[in-house]
Image (tube, rainbow, N blue to C red; front, side, top):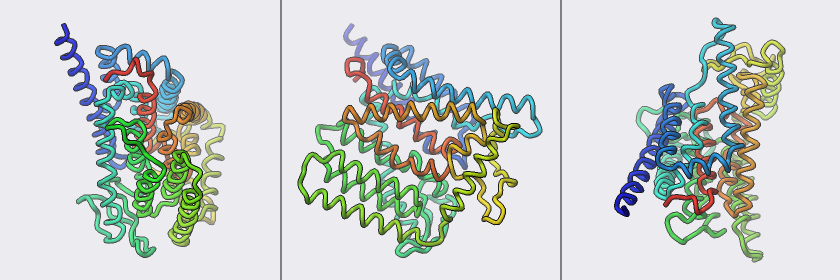
Length: 410
């Protein structure tokens, strides 16, 4: 009987790791520029739920009970976006171009992924994959920014931008620089949380000094993107993490953190002193998209998802930008009030989960979210494969780590 139980446990662990491997492959290999096959994440979510029902039913029920609000808001977001697309398909077939981007199906993967991650081996494998992504970019980003040669053969050419010692905007494994502040950028914070706070690989955990050193190295790599929002998020997470992990009143530590903040601000000002679009330009386009999003004709459906920019959305007298550069303005424009309301509810539930994790002494979900949050404000979010994969992995890992210990499978 014991052998049968042990064999079942090994099978459950193997299936969980296999499911996670498929998800991570789809999340990291495909992108906004190279979408995954449309049914991929929908099928993966269904398989994961069935797998959880058969092999980890108690854990699946625990996740559904404890995180019903987050999971319900994720489902509501998917339904609202699908409803908008379906209605436009029926009423405006000539206008409508695509029912739903394939990556939206990832939102349905939060529950099954949390169940798979509740097994220690699944969490360890995921952390190792994310750590490998970090190590690759610690080499790739400086190499690209200094040399101008893409790290991966066949990748899109780098944008030249000369701010010595950097000469190009690196993008690493991402298709382009603006896709990086999603799962790839967050990989450091997620892996660091599993290793240094959840202690899944041994008793060692992050101190304020070790966190400061490691996160500064990652922030230096992020600077090679020459992205304002990415660098601001990385520096903010570096400082907040060091403060949160500091258990001392020694003046030297706090003077060191002050110095890091000052130097970081100087580096930020230098890198973005020229050759970047102004805040006023982006604010004008955010206002334009919000204004047109509230047009009565499109208020309840939005204009529908398309991979092509809206060429008629221009601010007279200003440089043309091909989207709003703001996640929430673009969601309103694309999917209307129902889509935006559901998406905001999802964000509220996610922030609630992150706050609960912080109160439990788990700082990494907040640090990961803080690092990537500025790019949601200055660029797109729900429209990008990379951003949705980040939200899903963050939510699933936080849910798995917050599951009560008696219900967690080892």
